[in-house]
Image (tube, rainbow over all chains, first blue to last red; front, side, top):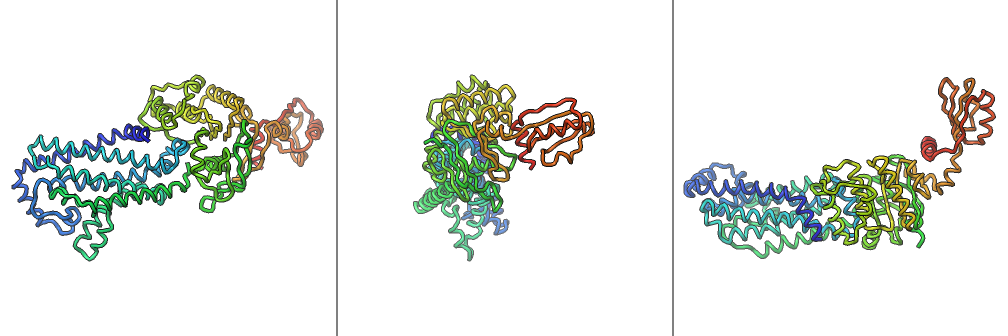
Length: 268
Length: 293
């Protein structure tokens, strides 16, 4: 299993570096613009923007957005939601589905499925290797955040809230991976990866759009509802229930995916 | 256990389309078993079922005493199987030696890779994406065989290899059989099959059409008669005796004898034989003969 994880890390190191660079750009712009906007000035612009933006837009991109801004909430709205929750979540689901379907689509299966390793164990190895990679991406995001905060004098981001925010992303990303794996086992091979990635975007949209509407119940069916990033970043609290729901759902999805994968025809 | 592979009424349908149907055969320990057929005949489907990659629609396959539908038992059995796919992708971004080390670590067994590379040389310092098709094939062969498996399942093993490497691989496989290993392989290069196989199974449209020892198959294949005649041959006179092709305006004839070839010779004598060659049919010619029928 360790051998598998180390290989995956080697194979995806360029992707990881690419991620780190994208995150660095977003974080640096976010933290620098806060400092350059001198906080108060930026708050005014934000509040004006907030008033002018269509309600649906605010719902979609600013779940629980406060009407006044501080650096933590600015960090979440400007960087974390798009890059970490939506993009990294979509990548996690895409990679999760790929862990099943790439054996057929990319022809990697002949080498791996002929090994004396059960499919259940192979899937678990792949889950752990993807989690190592997305965990690495999350860790590098945290480190870059701390470094840029030091660089631009944004001490507010050096506290434990940002650490909690990143730690809480692990069960959320794990759920993205395991749901991707589940979709890989049940959908046609060619559809699984794009559908898995698209589902993460849809999940976030449904969560935010349903907030405060008659369809609020739909929001509770989404994964991102159990990862209230803004709340965590601003208040510095994490709900054990949220973490528990994400972890449990992830374990169930992984278990079901493994059971289906064991019986699945792999035309390799 | 003398039978390493047993297929019993093995059937696989893909969305109602026949992959293979009622395929039955057995492969004995220590033999080289060739599984032949044109593209789409069902060779790869059979191999997928033998390795448990897919579940049969009907029938079953027993490999080294284990029903291939038993995932857990098959996992153990795979430690003794070396599988080479016709189409595969190696992990990108790694050197050949790193790929080898990675799979050896996963298997956790001693590697015969050095011995294999002494026969099929390969630059292991290159990255796999720099490899030619033939080099990738050699690395895949090493991955399939380096754990010294008892059963080798090889789908078109010589694909991409140059004639020298092809010959060396066939020699290596023959040597493996001599050491008591069992080789199940598909190929469409029939000259190779003749060099390696003990028995030959021909599959057509998903069904077995012939299963014989190679010498017995060759002896039944009949003769090829090639002759140059003084005057053009009337093809109608050959009806019931064999299939013929005429060239040079009917003065050169190649006949696949189906009846007694002595009758063919008598007939040809009537047209004045200038030159004649009578020989056993090669497996390649037999293959074409069977599949054109």
